Image (cartoon, rainbow, N blue to C red; front, top):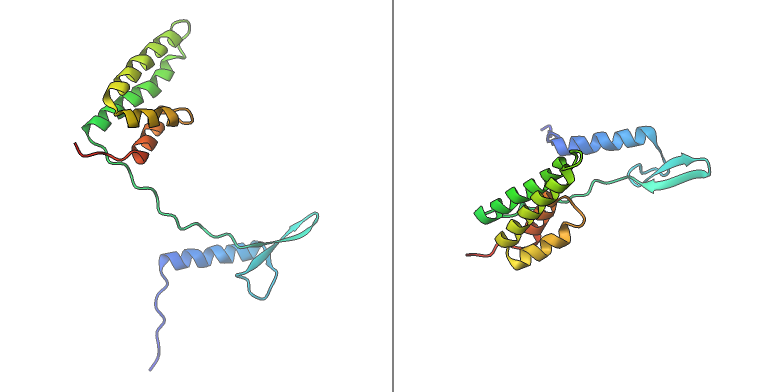
Length: 143
């Protein structure tokens, strides 16, 4: 009786093609091509392991209720107020007023824990991304 091989899955095929492409451009050091590759440099060959793709799952999206959706709308308005700031003479003043008004609404809508976390995240990212990060780090409490 003849034994049939199982068909190759798309992930296995992608991994096989990636390894073949790597070995096409880099000469393997040992008899096992899976271990290391030699990369020629002006200072001699450098041996490195084959790169592996990390197997991390994407983060779970945060839970969004009506209160958080209202906060997201205000944050989008804060980010868009930067566009108004490009108008000569009055744009900067108008953008600051719009940002301050929406910021006060955010302070009213968010819980103290969420607002404190938002202020920390808002220093390193646009307001919308900072708010999403805030919602991911501060869990939604049952009301």
